[in-house]
Image (cartoon, rainbow, N blue to C red):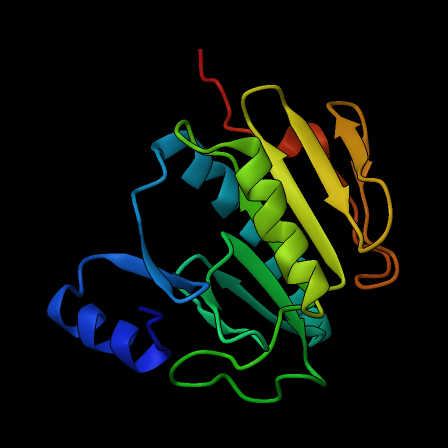
Length: 180
């Protein structure tokens, strides 16, 4: 039986403490990500927000912002960016589009291939750039539709010039700090 957004909303009302996605007609309950991966996501969101907000380029959201995609799925990336021209006002509920940029952060229990598949799904539905952050080996994969991923390491610079001109982030600045 294939479920709908309305079915998901009913289940979400019964269990508001759970984050859920609708993927190919199935409800997927999202577990907590783990401290380190959430800290990395927060770092990426801060980097994006601090560049986007003063320039009024668009909207940056965290993992609770859902997107109703053209294929009827409801997905929530760990971080996202939507150009201002595409989303002039924040919707009260879910944005009915694919974000321009989607970011996934590998959590301890995540499978890298499933994360890549999620990003590729976003790309197939209109997302322009996908980024996969892997705190385990300090790598960043930048994915574009129809192209090979670009893999970056500590010492490299993350840029997305076609979407965020001038934005630069040192890869090493994305990871959780270690205090003495």
